[in-house]
Image (tube, rainbow, N blue to C red; front, top):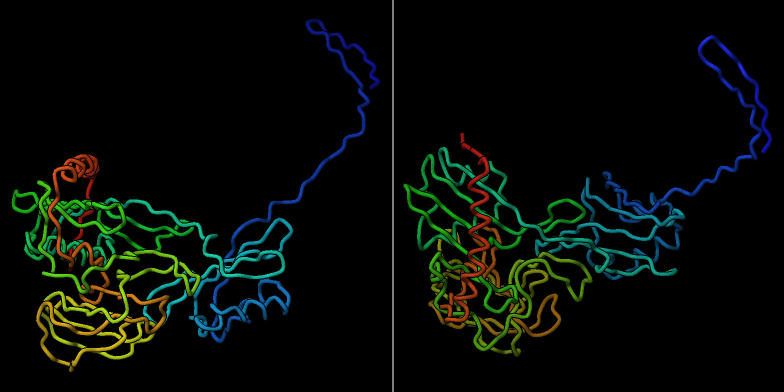
Length: 403
C-alpha cells in the first residue's frame, strides 16, 4: 500500500491530507436462502394436476404425485380457495407439499408429501405442529352462549364446557355480570390454530358462587376426566362403557392415521377388542340411524336427548334394530368388526353435542373416584391450574353481548 501526504496550515489548525492506494477490493456474494414456504390457492376449475403444474415441476413428477394412493383415493375434488403450502430447497427445487383435505367422515386430514431423492412419499413426520394453551375470560352481558361465541371461543369448546358442568350448573342460567374463565389446549400449524383439544381448567362465577372444573388424567394416556375443587367427579357420565374389557387404542384429538398416512383430527376414541365382541348402549336412547356410513363402515347412531348423540363405527354386524327404536342402557346394539377404513377389529366411538364431536372420556364415560395417591397428584396439578386461573382473574376480560 502506497501513500503520500501534504500539510495545510491555518492560524489555529493544521491538517494532513493522505492519498492512499489500496489493494483491489473483492466483493463476495452468496446465494439467497430459498428454503421457505409459499402458498398456492386453488382456483375455480382446478384439479390437482393443474395446481401442481404451477409449482414448476416436471410432468413426470406430477404423474408420480397423482399416482400416490393418498392422492388417488382421497383427493379427488379440490375446493375453491383451498390452500396448498409448498417448500423449496436452496436450489429452488420443490421438496414438500402440504394441504388440508376433508374426508368422507367429515374429518379434516393434513396431507404431507415429501420428496426423498427422486421419489415422492406421504410423510406426516415433516409436519410442524405444536400444542399451546389458550386463556379466555368473559363477562356475560345477556347470555352465556352469546358471550362465549362473541369472545371467539370455538364451538366444540363451548359445547364441552356446557356438558362438563351439566350436573352442577346449567350454563344458560348465567346472568349479566357473571364471569367465565377457562384454559384449553389449541393445536397450531405454522402459526395458525388448527384445532382445539381438552379444556384444562374452567371456572364459573354465578351470584357469588364459584364452580370449578379440572382435567385430570390418571394414566397420562390422554383419557382424562373432570373433577371439582375437592377432587370429586364433576359429573356422573353414562352408566356403562360400550364394550367391556377393551382398552382405548386411539384417544380423541389429533393422531397419525396409519392407513391414510395423514395427520387426522380424530373425532372419537377407538376401543381395541376382538371381532364379534358385543357393543352395548351406554345409556338409554333411540336408534337414529344404522347402516353403511363412508369410512366408518357399518355404523349405528343413537340419540340420548335433544343435544347428545353417540356413534358406533366399524361394526361387523347389527343387532335386530329399527330406526326410532328405544334401547335401554346395556342393551346390545351390534358387534365389533373392521368394516370401512380400518386397520383391524375395533370400535370407533363418538359423542356429539349439538352435532359437535366432544371427547367421550371427558363428558360421557363413567368418571372414576380418585384413590389416595391420585388425589395427592391431583392436588399438585390443581395448584398449577389455580395459579393460571388467578392470572386470568387479574387480566382485563372480554365483554361480549348477544344482540
